[in-house]
Amino acid sequence: MIWPKIYGITNPDEFGWRIPIFAFKLDRYTSVEICKKMNEKGIFVWGGDWGIGAYELVKYLDLVKLGGLLRVSLVHYNTEKEIDKFLKALYEL
Image (cartoon, rainbow, N blue to C red; front, side):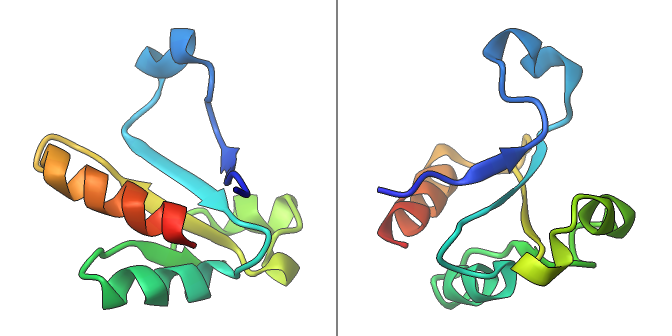
């Protein structure tokens, strides 16, 4: 399995410092490709170099040429079932 590259806080001891939004990329796909695959399964996420609301960061990290990042928000209105569905779809990629 190829693990996603997470951009942001990944240390569990520091999770309280962040909001429940994270951005990542997979080496085999652009973020737009991942976004489309997720959308086909009824999972709605943002992809692209502009879609995550942090274009300057994506540009600074030189990720535009790699297809940008995928943005996922897991907050109080997401159910465990929805999160499991997302993780299963991600794993299938």
